[in-house]
Image (cartoon, rainbow, N blue to C red; front, side, top):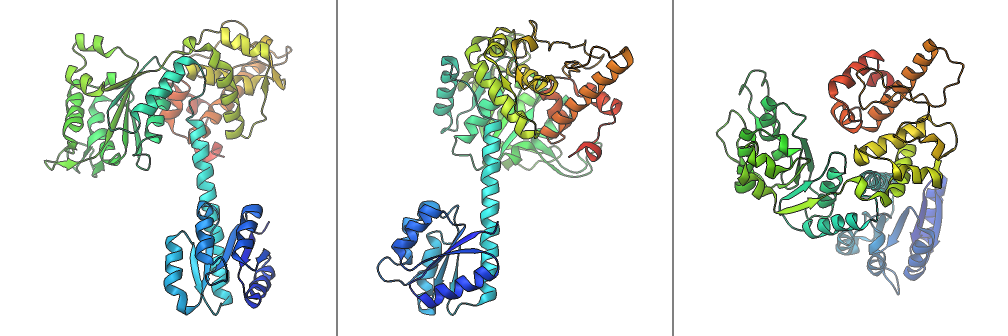
Length: 469
């Protein structure tokens, strides 16, 4: 469907001329002879583009722009002006007008401006949609009192530059809290850079965090900009910081205290402006007693501590989480949305989620894939957290489940194995697509070692080239 365009001009000749040119190109055109009429049409019809004359009796173009100031982000407004009105036209662009066209109007100029404005509006709309999708993906879901305390801490910590230490069990959503702090902070337009300290070998983590110069060590064939530099004017999230070596801890402490660093192989001091948020599932005070974590770094990080409760401490949030994960999975995988009965929700609330929210999410996705019925019921969720009909996991697939729910009873052993393998392959491809084919991220999400995931990719001949779409 072609975009709808509104022309606001007191001269009937210009209105009729623009209408003829634009309708010939297939656009739908609306006309307004006064500024007041134009404002009402914009608010009622929400056109895709507005042509607005500057000089009009009564409400002129600048007044119209001021009244529509809240809409210029989503509705491009192109100002029409005579040569004597150019200074006013420039003023209009400062008020948010997309562009201005001088009189007499030229057909080619009009059509180029329309295409540019429509393309810009489409890109802005898509970007807003992507941001909404990203925000939904990282949304903190639930209304329990314990979660309300977490939200309150986020709101208090976010506007400051204070370091934050998020602690809680594995899978409780510490990353979501970190992203929430960044999203509500004054640094929201800056980068959010995440490093999983447990996933990077000790010999590589310093290079990853601080960067290196060409030739600084064997294999350093090019200069690399470190994560701290990438996070300049933004937020650095150090996940699982309790697994960081003492040597690297000392260098991180320097960045926190001095806001400066040196790349490996360089003596040049680089200034950075970075806010650090750290997370851990360890008791860092116990790690200090074991001499595996620096006490001075702990106090520097622990300015604002935020504890994220385990799922067993907020069971009333489980129904909301289940619906949220089901919606996300259906949207991201173009999958038919299934419902959960009240008895299914009650059964899920009673389960022991040792892996917390991460385990619940994976389980909900398994149910969506493997349950044949449109409505998932309690009988599909036996005690112990396994889907009815599940076979034991194949060797070496801890965290990657091959469920067999829905398999016909007449399947022989060979066919059943094929059914299980096909189910596991489909599950892995879905998770890889969801995580942009990032192997490390996918392994983390499905809670399996990267080495196991690589073995499965080879076993099932999974590749982005073949299975990317």
